[in-house]
Amino acid sequence: MNTVTPQRMDEIINQHFMYEATDDVDGVTASLTPDAEHEVIPSPFGVLREPGRIRQFYSQLFTDLKGESVTPVRRLYGEGFVVDETIWHGQVNDGRQFLCDGKSGPVSFRMLHVFELRGDKISRENVWCDLAAIQQQLGARAA
Image (cartoon, rainbow, N blue to C red; front, side, top):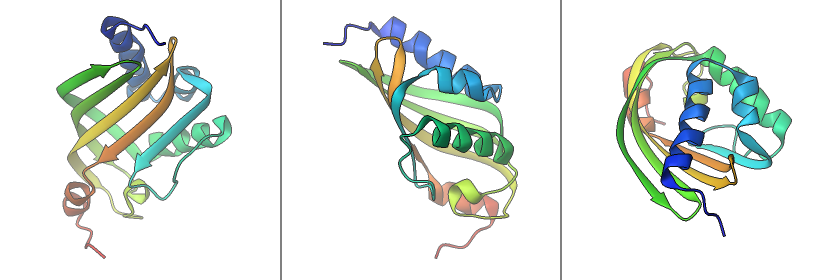
């Protein structure tokens, strides 16, 4: 049984987000369990389970995107998990993360994170992005 309180969950997730906001690959990977599962939906990278591949993903992400701010929408808590909804604002330098290779520009889009926690670490992170909004803002045509 996971007895992590919502307050502690907030601390763990907010620290993870701070590492992402400061492009700190070491911090991000340290916030995950060694057997963590990471997936951005949709993404050409698929489900990542190996620490080296997760590190590689974040290194590429921090090159491709530059966040400016995040607007919190809501956060819901369950036994060992958190659902976090936000609006992300920033600059896309290369849209490959969103199936828009080579496209760039300012974007704002809704993101939904589902985190599973084990102790003081994130054991699973799934991220859903509003792909249609991103592609529209980057001037990409739907396939």
